Amino acid sequence: MTTETPQPDLHANKVNDDSRGPRLREIPLRLMVPNLITVLAICAGLTGVRLAFEDKFELAVSMVLVAAFLDGIDGRVARLMKATSKFGAQMDSLADIVNFGVAPGLVLYVFILDKAHSFGWIAALVFAISAGLRLARFNVMEESAAKAPWQKEYFVGVPAPAGALLVMLPIYLSFLGVDTTPGFAVGSAIYTMLIAFLLISRLPVWSGKSEKKVRRDLVLPLTIGVVLYVALLMSYTWEVLSATVIFYLLTLPFGARAWQRKYGTLTVNEEIHDPNASGMDRGL
Image (cartoon, rainbow, N blue to C red; front, side, top):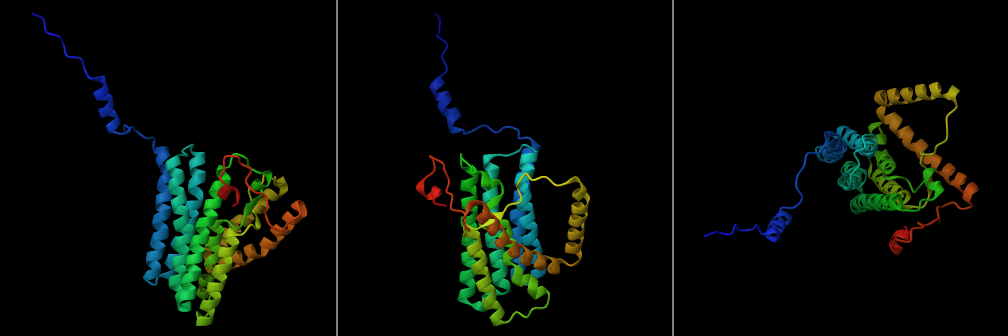
């Protein structure tokens, strides 16, 4: 008498395999490096907020600036190491909102804007939301299939990293001896609203990403200039940061003027020409 060997239920095995989810596999270390930088940036930004609540404002501002720096290099590191991923892009977007919007706004509120009461909180809130909107517009424009040639030279509105640096000018000035009176607090709230407006505006801002070449005889002087700037920043941090912010703000009209000479308008009116984009995306 012979017995039949039971056949495996292939359908049941397939269901079991599907229920386990994707199988884990080894991930190259280089793929983790950009994400680790992003996580460190988030930690630095949130630590800056904590230090502000503990009245350690110089350390708080330093941590926010470190967070902005780390957040600015993680994408470049990912591209250099060929370690870009969708997961990393999502992490980077989260870090951008924390480090360029929430952390600077909260540190500024704890330091000075709370003296302006509700108006100060509204200013901090508007800045954080504006930074989020600015980042969303940037992501939409970067993912667009059809990019305009001017996008290599100009940003639409002040970029969020620059906004984080600019909005803390009242803190830099107070470290230099400016009195934090209630009037200064109200002025700081108005200034915060102005920076928030620049973030979401359609003002053309030089991006510094153009492919213009530098003359060979200027390479060494420019290198020495960068070294000198960094040395001054290390020695006279708040003076240099204040001067940098004021200089950056003064360059904005020149960027708009250069755009007007080339395209005939003071603001960027060209929309995204992507047939797959929604009406909301094209209206950004």
